[in-house]
Image (cartoon, helix red, strand yellow):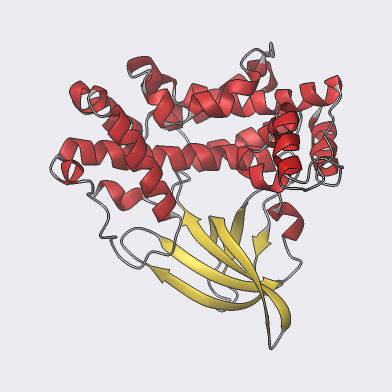
Length: 329
């Protein structure tokens, strides 16, 4: 019996801790957020190690843009060694994602555009790094097997082929739309699900979209876990030691959300790399030893009875690193 995606992903993270260049990569990325010319980096945190490469690659274009706006822009610089370190780190994420999706891509190559693999991975396709040698082969097989055997992959591979081939553009647009809307506060089954009309009228297309949405989230969360493992030896834990209050703790048919109020400095440094995956242990019920894994979707600062605090929107992840398992039902 294969391990869950969550457990397999955690084993992969432990493998990454052994990476020879791990400390160098972490120090480089941390330093780039303080370095002149990389002030744009926060805007590209969602593409992780590609953020600095993107800012550097298009430095002249950004320079011209800011010059027209009358804003001073210092051109960023990266040494050849720094570029190779960033590309090495990104190649690891690329390798895992492509291996996990290989079964789907072999049957439906056009789905690369739906999963946004081409645009996200364009920077390091040329890099000659044997990523497979970094990981224990058995652990690598665990994550691939657990991923390829999940219900979303099986659903995509089993829908009629014409449902995929005849709806690529609609599929991509709808998946992007759903993912954007699902990242917001949800209290019930959203009315926008099933739109546009042809989605509501085609059960296979609805299953296909739901499965791609869930797989996209799983891949994104898997990448985030691996990304964080370059900087952290364990996931940040929200518990009685740092939670000041809980504004919301509710579930609906789609997901389980918790809104936490914490110290304004907790997790702040990690936030600049994008919203992290964290752990939550309910501080109100001391008898409940359950620890949940979830993703921070948003945060804000506010003043109140406790001075300046930080409000964090946490959404639980299941054993497949997914928040939306009920979409298929």
